[in-house]
Structures are given as C-alpha cells and as structure tokens.
Image 1 (cartoon, one colour):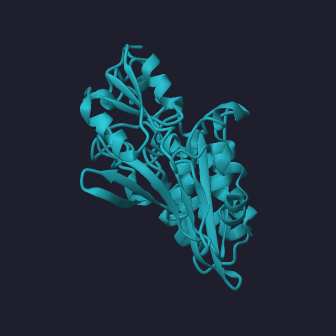
Image 2 (cartoon, one colour; image 1 turned 135 degrees about the horizontal axis):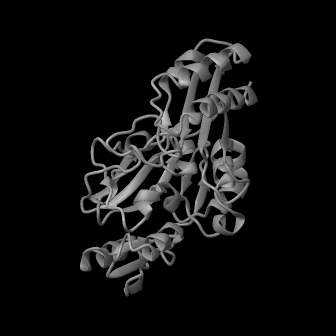
Length: 323
C-alpha cells in the first residue's frame, strides 16, 4: 500500500474538512473493506480520516414508536445482539449476525457494510482494469462469473455484497447524509444505483459526503426474517440472500417485502414475488408461487444459473418461516 497521513476527526464537520483538504482522501469506519483496498492498491489516498472518535456515531436508539436510529459506526455485533433490534426488526439482526466471522463483526460497522465495494475478483485484482475501475470491459462476461448477478446486470455484473443492506431496503430504511448543502435523507431503496447509471459507483454518496445516520421505521405488525446460502459455513459472502417481511390482514397477506441479495448490483426488491403474496394466506402454495415469481426475468450468465434455484429455495423457505 502507499504511504498516507492518518487523521482522527472529532466531528462530522471536521471529517468533511479533512477530506476536502486532501483530494482523494478517504474515510475509515471499521476499516475492513478499506484495508483490502489499500493492500490491493485499489485506492492510494493521501489521507485516511478515522471516524471512531466522533461522538454519537455508534449509537443505537429505539424510538418510542418502534423505529430505530442507528449510527453508522455501530458494529454488526452490536446490532445483532441488541434486544430492541432483535425484537422489532429481527431480519436486520439476523443479517448482521450472518455476516463474516465473529472477529470481523466486532469491528465491522453497519455503515461500512452498506457502503462496501463489490467483491468481484476482476475488480479486486490490480492487473484488471474493468468497468468498475474506469476500463471498458466487464471481464465477468465470458469469464469466471459463477458469483455474479442474474438480475439488473449490464454493463457491469458485480453483485452488491452487503448483508445488512438487503434487510434495510426491506424495512424501508433511509440514510441521512451530510454534505455541502447540509443534511439530506435518501430512501434505502433509492440509494443504491445500477451500473447503467455509472458502472464505477454503487450508490448516491458523493465525494466529501458522510453517512451520519440510518433510520429504520417502525415494523409494528410486520413479521420478518433473513436467510442466506454460503459455500462455507463461516467467514464467507452469501451466494444468495433474502430479507422478507409480511403484514397480514386476518389470514391474508396485506403487504409484503421480498428483497434479494448477492444476485444483482443492488439489493434487488422482487415486486413480482410481493404481488404473488398479496391477498393470499401465507401457506406452501403461496410461498411456492412467490418463489417462482421471484425468478421471472432472471438472466443467468454462463456459470451462475444455479442461483435461480437458490433464489426459489430461499424465498420459499423464508416465507414459510413467517407463516
């Protein structure tokens, strides 16, 4: 990695000033993904700005109405173990619990998890100048693509790697971002961007901006769950993940959220699966119909067609766990 200056910010305003002073400077939360980028020379910043000393950024607050206010520096382990999160938003707690390994969860932050860059090996290797790095080729097309997107791909096919983002989209969360014009709030469902907009970006966060809070609305009346499938039992990214939430009116499903992870460049909300559940009793037939609907429009590449079957299995299994 390159030599760089290390600075500790004690306020969000100071963090932004430290970024502005050195073009190319980067923020450090837990540092898990950043360390990989530094070692692999994917970034060579003149300055790294640490956020750990800023008061309040690691808070987890349960609101009186059942909502959550989460600081971006809260660790995945803290969220997974938080009683209020487990009770009101179990899919979020589960998504944090499944990430990586216990050691990493104790350091990795929710902000870093949401903002992490893709794990695509072509992007991660210094020797490949792919679309994500300003090149003109996605090497997964015609190359090794068994972990890549089956929805929303093109021109880049790197899937979004965040566990927690899938649950946050399912709960209708929003992100508070501090920038030049003051704070702005962006819905999680709008925050992540497809590569058709800009293949070098995965979200709307602009240079010099800081994610300062995640707001999760009340999930009163909702039942939720998260599930995923990995190649390895621990310390692995999911091949497919899902966060599902349902709200009933009597026996019938009144509202549903089905969001898939690791299958698209963004957390992929399946409107077809949600529509298949609407007005139905949540039984085996409805779960199977939703699972089939969830893969309509899938466009697998040469080596990742297995993800179609995994999506169906996880959708059905997760929905039945909520029945």
